[in-house]
Image 1 (cartoon, helix red, strand yellow):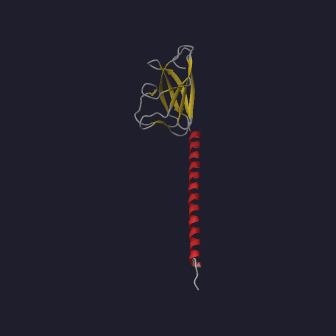
Image 2 (cartoon, rainbow, N blue to C red):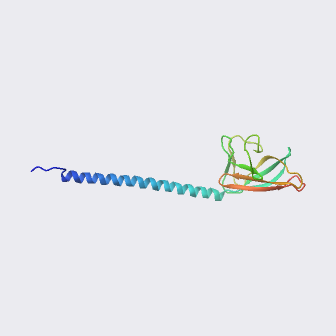
Image 3 (cartoon, one colour):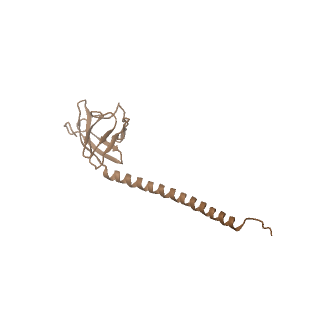
Length: 165
């Protein structure tokens, strides 16, 4: 007798191979999706942790030697904040009365400028020259810093007739 088609053994082997290939494909897909989800959740938790542990405070503003407003910026959080990258680009933004002040060499600067990275450790302070003229008596403006990890602080500088506000 002559039979046409595949034998039962070859058919069974093909069915097993197709099942293994389908299971492998499904496992690869599920593994990739769960890995991406886990990474996203870990990133979100890490970001939330950084945000809840970081805080900036502007402690005082005063009239500097060149008539510019100088202010002291303090890290009152529990983690270090990088305010300037290794290449000198600032990760800290300054706003005077809501308008941004560019972070280049012609605008605001850290006093005693450091080359490379500027790191503000917990409880540490850094003086900043806003390069904004100190307000005349009876005048005011707001100084706002926005830093890494969603940190920010606002200081209202009102001159009541002294050298600090």
